[in-house]
Amino acid sequence: RSVVWYIRAKVYVDMEQIENASECFDRAIALCPKEITFYECRADWLYSLNLYDESDADFQKIIDLDNGYYIGYMGLGRNALGRGDYEVALAYLEQARKLDPTFAQIYAFQAECYFGLKDYGQAVDNLIKTFEIDPANGKAFYQMFVVADSAFDIVCSKVKVKMIQEPQNPWWPYCMGMLYFQSEHYAMAIDHLKQSFHLMPNPLVAYYVADAYVRLSRPQQALPYVEQALAMDSTHVRWRVKKADIEFELGNFDQALRDYIRSIAIDSDEAYAYY
Image (cartoon, rainbow, N blue to C red):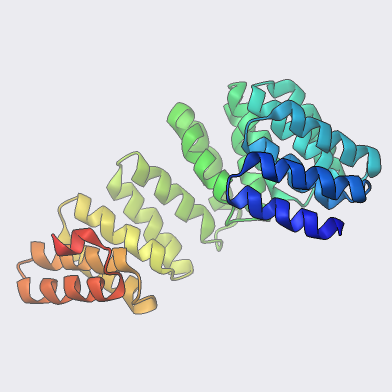
């Protein structure tokens, strides 16, 4: 029966019915007060509502039930970070890291703490550690640009070191290319993105090479890269629209029209294609 109440709670969470979700969590936990999953789910939900004190109580309960489980400490650290208590957050996150040094998200949250303390070098070191474990970590990728807004040179210098240390890893020139792209240094972005693409062809990288060429008003050089992106994934609407824009700029109006029509066929809600 406890699982039934737990499932109901999750449904009410998805429906954003706070009172009903809270009641169902309470009932599930009353029936099975040692089930860590129930506390963890409720704690994450309370965190999402910025109810940090209430979330803390559940994460502390997790620690009481199993002090070897990193999630309790990570949750307390994340809540402290939400309050802006960076030093307290780092202490909890370090405990979590010691329990599971392979969980990438811990380093990403540590990086956010160091950024809040304006220790940009350490923030970048933690982001790099996150990427070493999980290159697809979205939080760390976003945070890299946040840090770069305050310390662009520090971020770039540390990423360059990784490029030298791991010359066959396409991730680091991709990061460098996107840092230059976001800072509107498009020629430098192209050089690094091409390096990444050469190491491991990827449609997203090809798209950004094309986009950088477009922003430099060089559509002729952009076209083959957006075509390569589409050759690897012909169903991506944004890339199809980009190709249509490039064809239009080159005066290839019939081909541009075909690409716009094709993008609408892929996604009829793509308003720009109609325009």
